[in-house]
Amino acid sequence: MRIDVVTIFPEYLEPLNVSLVGKARAAGLLDVRVHDLRGWAYDRHNTVDDTPYGGGPGMVMKTGPWGDALDQTLADGYEAGARTPALVVPTPGGRPFTQALAVELSASPWLIFTPARYEGIDTRVTAEYATRLPVHEVSIGDYVLAGGEAAVLVITEAVARLLPGVLGNAESHRDDSFAPGPMANLLEGPVFTKPPQWRGRGIPEVLLSGHHGKIARWRRDEALRRTVANRPDLVARCDPAAFDKKDREM
Ligand code: 6GU
Image (tube, rainbow, N blue to C red; front, top):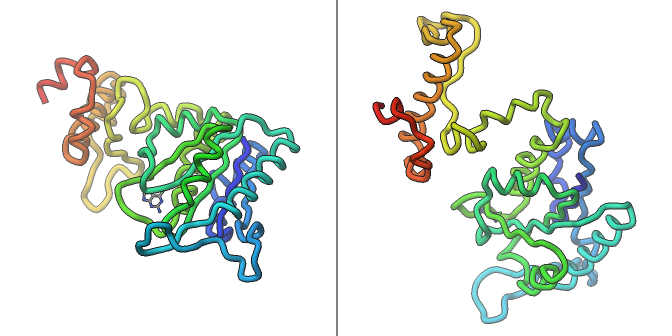
């Protein structure tokens, strides 16, 4: 997968050199290119923002630099052989970022991120590219960040770990919270490792039993308990057919 990021803070994206995403890049599974939007500014102050039409506080990012940056990023990517780009526009006004969207984006061979500062990008920019490419306006949660760069880190990590070959064990995301299957919409329950005793705290007996059926049942019960406590909205969204008789007894 190819990922381009256009930003006025390229150094904000340096964590993409680290950990899982950094290793995926080093392994050639992910080709990440970060570009400085100010390279496409056209006055001597490198201006990329201006006051909003209609008045109001804050500044809006200008069409010119974004249009030129995206045209060149697209041309360079096509030149390098990349195909079927999708534009990902991080904005608190976007659709909520979910595991389902991470899975959808992970199937795209080329993502172009446009994290904005200030009050966002002039709406004509997304309207223009939406005539040519899939455009996903995405929010990572119901709070306001100073810019979209942190969202790019979040989305890239969630997508990269789904790419074939990135996780050592393909089963690692089988049990993820939000993964499809019998645990769909349930949060992951508690986990334990050695030593068996720590500060007077032991391990739930069932995990030492070697009885896989009982262990699976216990994990499901714990997942359900945690989901009820922390995310009652997810329980409400569960398919009643996904519950069994034992769930109803809880
Ligand atoms: Cl993607 N951007 C900003 N600025 N704030 C956010 C967000 C994105 N998602 C949640 N809050």
